[in-house]
Image (cartoon, rainbow, N blue to C red; front, side, top):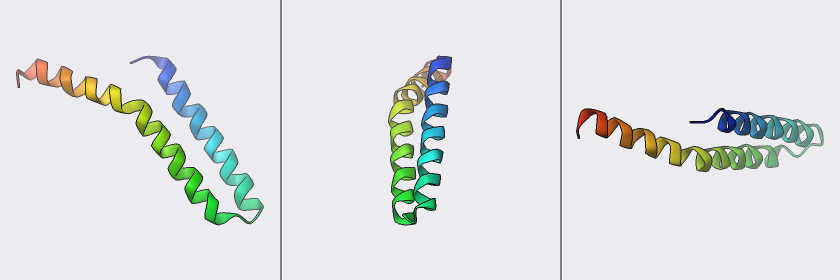
Length: 64
């Protein structure tokens, strides 16, 4: 796992937080949840391959 993915996740988190603040200040609270969910889905799609690789490594270590 690279450090690069940690920076990407942090950048997405900062962008989502800023957009949420802008939307909540402008009275668009219904969109803040959608932006948060979109950010979560993007991050999950980024880390799913790494989680899969982790499970494969654990399987090989324990011989499953």
